[in-house]
Image (cartoon, rainbow, N blue to C red; front, side):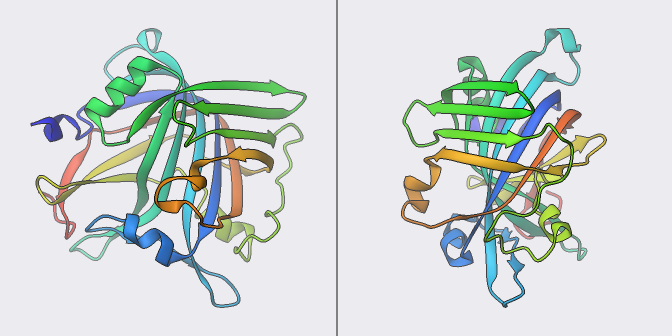
Length: 260
């Protein structure tokens, strides 16, 4: 019966003080085994004709995080990290949902980690996370309990001017890169007990991510697990601030996309 609880039963609300998303390009063949039934990789073909899949490493400073039926005063402030694969979910009507499949999440709060694992399949771990904004530079430092999701990243957010794409990015234009800025409208989780997909729809306001220059000095996620030994390339980095954000209760669909 635990899987019934893990369907995101509560709509949630929060405000992002900062959200920084780093998107890394990898060969589709590397990521395909991590995509569960019903979903397909969301890929991009560069000007040379090479196809790429993508993993996002996101860090979010979330304020007043709470079920939407509670006032903001009862919410909690948490810093969260997540590693997600960009995926697609086709439906019988011909519509295709674009969303993220979560590989791992980390949080700076023990109760958040426990609650996240009870009410989702986001694979939460507890970590020591610090955030700081000094002189126009946003700095996140994550030290995971198992060492498998350590992150140290600085983003230059002060001057307000969009940064150019990282060197070696597969994207031809900034517009192409923005399609893989994250977070996307949906999050997907596969439920093996029922061979179905749980779809969680996001809600947000004033969504205007800005490309930023970043310095990543530590990122251990790609050194462990199924992606160990891969050579991801930083494809883009986007930042948003002071954004109202939320997500609806999860809804179950068949792996073919029909409403269950």
